[in-house]
Image (spheres, rainbow, N blue to C red):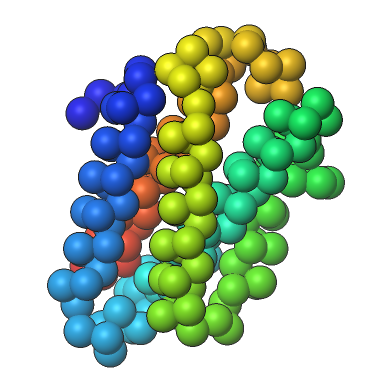
Length: 165
């Protein structure tokens, strides 16, 4: 499916890619889910990748809460710019690198549902009209939500597949 252009497409592709990601992880026995990847990357195992997704959900939800209440959110996070996201992602990794995989999966499910609920509350125009909200600049609210859901789930699946080779 191409990049979503409607609320329904966003919800459908987000759910499809989320399910595909979880189904891929679930095909492995628990010991394999916990195993380190063969490549030496920051995201060293499935937990790391899923924790990354969860934390980005939280950040996007925070941007939305601040932005929709008239504030200017710190995007991507306070003290970081898009150019410094590798450092931000390192901080996220450090926060979760001792967490339990099952707990991370539970957190991811919860944050995924919160993002879906947020999307559900908005119309197509609210999601996809560019420049509708001052805080989103020249882009749309939907663009942020695509990046945090369907596109990010696709990225995660690729990272895990590569790590499991």
